[in-house]
Image (cartoon, rainbow, N blue to C red; front, side):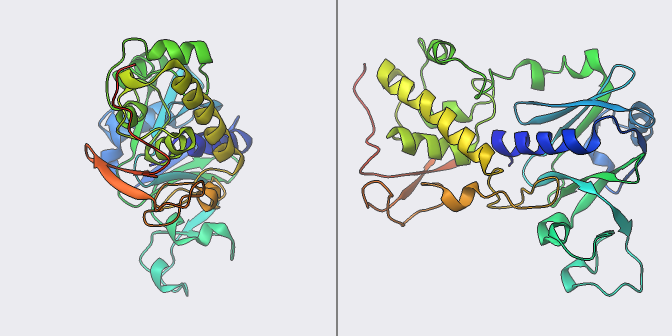
Length: 306
């Protein structure tokens, strides 16, 4: 699932490409996206004819401010990513690579990143007034798409209940979050109602960088540990932003390109490989339903209460 660096990278790309563009038509082969309202025709009524005034990020959500006081919200979920470019519906006589022969939408460009296999699962198309398209490529069809009046969308629990943004917290605010807080640190970092934007990749990365075992309980962390963790979150997320995010699985930029943070990752999905700090083999454990990657030598679990 795209995390803060991936979503922020997409938002920055969208601002350059779709701001001040009008949505003139939509197409989809998966109307189940439209949770609110439930009917595609009602969704079209809210979207078609509206101009995209601004594009922002709230947690892992992409928020489009539209004209007429409307909000379009897209959460890309597990396999979704937004692209901007030009496509045409596949022609029966087109000569295509085998993997593309059953796809409905084909890039107009003859070559380039849009032909990456991960970009071929186009489920939703917004036609723009400059002959470009904003599309959602989503292999698993889990994305969430909402549109409606601003006061309704922004009041939804999914947004209201989000914790503070991981990159917009001061150190003092971060430390205050942990006052009297209990729980396993890896699970807390993944809790979007506690801190918004961090997912499985960057939780593992920041904990390795902080030398904190993922099973360490928050109540056992000293103030000095939390300051190190705060600085690690900022350092890792900013590095990932600079590198355009991580393209380990489905994520791509709005131009269809790979992010490159995963090429420099410290611990995530490096089970059995040597730790860059001490040389011990990276281990993987389950915490709840999620995997956690860590160095058993560098990241000792703190069990004594502070």
